[in-house]
Image 1 (cartoon, rainbow, N blue to C red):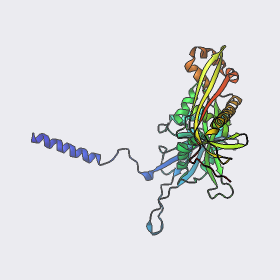
Image 2 (cartoon, helix red, strand yellow):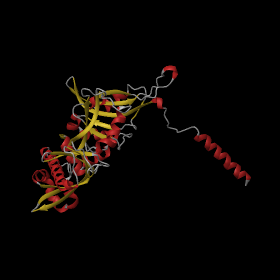
Image 3 (cartoon, helix red, strand yellow):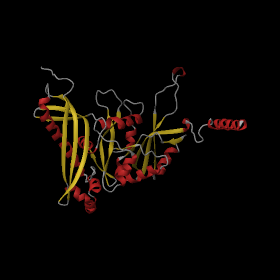
Image 4 (cartoon, rainbow, N blue to C red):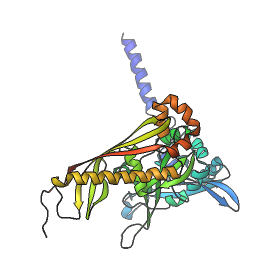
Length: 391
C-alpha cells in the first residue's frame, strides 16, 4: 500500500514539473505584432488595380521615462501593404514586421467604398477562411478609402481601436445612430437570398472651430445599403434613425427626437423603443406594416411648461414625426431598390406558399408593395420638475 502511494506521489510531482514549463505553443508578447484595427481597400497604382490592407498595430516597445520610470500610455502604429491578390497584399504587409502578426485582438474590420461596391463577397470569403479570423469582430463601411479612417486619432481613449470599440458597444445604438453588425451576422445576411442588408458607416469627424481636440477623429453614423452583395447607397441621419426604430431594439436608448406642435418645439427623449414587422397578402399582392412602440420623456420645450393636459396632442405629434422619419427610410430603400427591412424574409417565413410565387419577381413586388407605418408613442414623464420658470 505504501509503495502504491509512493508511486502516485512521484507521478504527481513529475506532472507538476511538466506543467511548470508553460504552454507548448506559447509566444512572447515582444514577438507579436498585435493588430487592433484592419481596413480593406481597392486602389489603382500606375494603372493597375491592387488590393490594399492597412492595420493599426500596438506599439509594444516600452519607452523609459525620466528616472527610468516606465511610460504606461498606449500607442498604435499604422502600416499598410498592397498586392495583386488579397493574400499578396497581406504578405507584403507582414513581411515588414519583425514579429508574428496577431489579429486575435482586432476589434473591427473597415471596408472601403470601392471594395464594398465591387468585391464585398471576395473579401468576406477570404476573411472567414483565415484560421485566426474572429467572427465576432465588428464590421463597418466607409466612404472613400478605409485607410484614411485608420489615420484618425482618438479623442477620449488611449488608442483609436479602443475608441471605435467603445462607440460600437455603447454610444451608437443608444443614440440611434446605427446598429451593431459583426462579421458573422453580416456573412449570414450576405448569403441569404430573401433579404438585403446594411452595414454601419464609420466616417471622419474634423475638429470644428473652437474645439480643443484632435484634428480628425471618427464617428459612427448611418448605414451603407447593401443589395445583392454590393454597396448601392447610404442612409443618412433621419433615414438611419427610421431604420433603427423599425427593425432594431436598442439597449438603453437615449434618442432625442425634435417635434413641433404649432409654434411649440419640444424634444421627445426616447428611453424604450421596439420595432416589429407584420405581413399579409391582399388580392395576391404583399402588404406590410411596420409597428413601432416608443416610450420616453419630454425634457426640453420652447415654452416654459408642458404638463399632463398637453399629453394627447404631444403624443399625436410624436407619432406623426416618427411616421415621417420612417417613410424617409422606406423611400430611400425603394430608391436603392433594396429590401433592407426584411419584408421578403418575412413572407418567406410566414407565407411560404405565396412566397414561392412572388420570390422570382420580388424586386418588382417590393417597389409596388403596400406599406403602412403604425406608431404608438407614450410620454412617461415631463421631466423631473413640476414647475417651470415664469419670465
